[in-house]
Every structure is written in structure tokens, then in C-alpha cells.
Length: 289
Length: 169
Image (cartoon, each protein chain N blue to C red):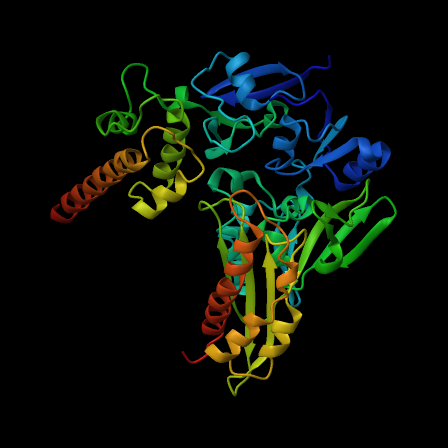
């Protein structure tokens, strides 16, 4: 279980990193926290000729607030994000999900951007980033482009990031809303069998003015439940409204099945988890119990 | 074969390694430095047997390249063990039968060592979280939990002693 040989570079600046990735194209892979890429190298599922280590590029790390956005550098460690008071206060959904991402030693190295760029269908962060309506900043030799989270994910382990480009920053709009992240996994810290990211914002009359519902772990990409969201808007998020929303999830998009969790099982537990998540989000938004 | 020169501090001692880019930190510790207390189980980040401390934080030694550790401080199980005998946590492992085959033990001890350094009176929930990334196939985990709880409890008592001495002074 040893990686095939590769060359290694550890640039200090983003420009150097992008230059290296641009010159080597498909033969190079950027190395972020290594918690997914290193196993893929060890299993020889990936055989790049050059690793471009991003861990020395300081400008890629950090959490800051800019106007009404929370901006997270792609190389920010999951552990740092989990401990961030700013994230807890302004984007609690992300903090709730990060607690389910791996274990202390993997979060100490694993990065926010690395997890998103890897686009594992069972990972927590892709679903969360779609639910948060985040924008992702991608930098290449010719400049920067900004994608909505839903445009970023293209398939299983596939994103819109091209060879020679890098995900450099995640921009999350700050909104006052209640949120919840729930998942079913074989063990704490394992990848999700089904995960649910939910958020609800209430008007002064206790009716939903905004609702977001995204499923993870069930298909190649995060599944946004737009019909469920629509059913909640304008209603008090009581048990009846939440049940109606759970019935409206696109159950045919629960496609994945595995030895430990069949597709049928996932289709049964997804609506249950959705109800729990919506009730928790409504509670966090200040809905009367 | 291209070799990279890496200078880091291992268990308090500055060392310079000559490694291939693909060599993991765990392999370098074992193969280049003879620190075989670091065990390699799955070699792809699942089992936690290879846990070492990187600048004080537990990390997977198999998921870090040796070449990435330039300028860092790495602590292995050898680095927290006294020259003879056992440290308090290790002794508690022995007393609580918190190991059988011993393969996961260095990783378990280092994960818990880091937790107790940060939070000497850690509660059960914190202990469970700290070892959530370390697999053990022998003990069923409960003796490990008890071993760590014992040290946390003893730290709590020591702290109570100190504060009562201070208040009576």
C-alpha cells in the first residue's frame, strides 16, 4: 500500500502554485490536507507525476467577514473552522456539519476546500455548501471565476474545476436563520449514508420566509429539495407543514446503495431524517414548539 | 530516484532525513529513524494506528508525506515514554487492561495524551471523541475509556488538592 513515485513541489505563493498546475496539466494534482488524496495515492487510484503541495501557501488559509459574507480560504483546516466563533455565530449549519466530518486527527489536516474539491458524494460539506447558497472562487492562469455551489458540483468526485485551476475561496452569505445538520452513518465520523442540511427563517408572524433543504450521501451530487422548500414558505413550520415538506423530497434522486445501506433503506430513512432536521431548524429559528 | 532533504524535530531532537517524495512520515519514522513504536495498520487513513503528534496535534502518520514536515515538531510514542517504566497514562492502560495485542496502543495513547495535555480533566464525551478515529479490535474500547477517565479523575483530584491548599494558606 505505497504510492507510485511522484515529484513534489511546495510553492509559497498562489501564483507559483497555479503556474505549476498550469504547466503540468492533468499530470499534476494539488495536495491540500491529504485526507482523501493520500489514500487514493496509497491505493494507486490516482497516479499523478507531480504533487503541488498547497500547505505552504499562507494566503489560502483564513476566515474573515467581508460585508455580509463569510469568506473561508480553501486551505482552512476543518478543525480551525469547527472552532471558529465566527462560523458558529454566522453560519451555524457549517459548524454543525463539521462536527460530523471525520475525527480530530483528520480534521487537524483536512481542509474545507479539499473536501469540496474532492466532491465525495458521501461527504458532508458539499451538501452544506449547497444549502448555504455559497459561492466558490476558482483561480486559473487567466484569472478568477465565481460559481454558485450548485454549478460547482458536476458528478460523483467531479467538479467544474479544470486542470490548472484551483478552488481558492468559499463565500457564504450571512443570513439570520435557524439550521440543523443531521446524518446517519455507521459510526460517528464515518461518511454519511444519508445526511440532511436544513435551514429555516421565520417572519414576525412565525411563518417561513425562507427554507432550504439539501440531501447528501444519496446521489452523485447534493440533492436540493426545491418542492419541499416551496411547501414550507408562507406556512408555520408545524408538524403538518414539515410532513408535507418531507413527502415532497425527490425520492427518485435517492439513487445510491451500498452493501451496508441499500437504496431502499436510504429511501426510507431520508424522509424521517428530513422531518427531524426541519423540526430542529424551525426550533433554532425560534418557532413556537 | 530523487531524494528530498527534510529537517524537523523528532521527540525533541533535530534530525535531517533524505526521503523520496512518496515516503509517508510514518514510514520515515520507522525506516529512517528506527522509531518502530509508530505502527502502520491500514496505510490509508482509516485505522489511526500510525497517529503521531504534529506540532502537538494528533495526525495520521500515513497521510502525511515526510517531505511535508520540514520545520515541524513531531512526537511519537517514544517521545512521551519515560526512559524506564511507563508514564501515568500508559500505566493506567496497563492497570485497566486497555490493550491486548497492542497494535493500536501507541496511536490510542498519543490521541489521549494530546487530549489530556489540552484538557487534563477531560470528560467521557471528550475522551470518546478524541479516540473516535482510532480503531481497536481487541478491547471493545471500554477499558481504554476507563484508563483515560482514571487519569482525568486523578488530575481532577490533584487540582482539588492544590486549590484547597491554596485557599487554606
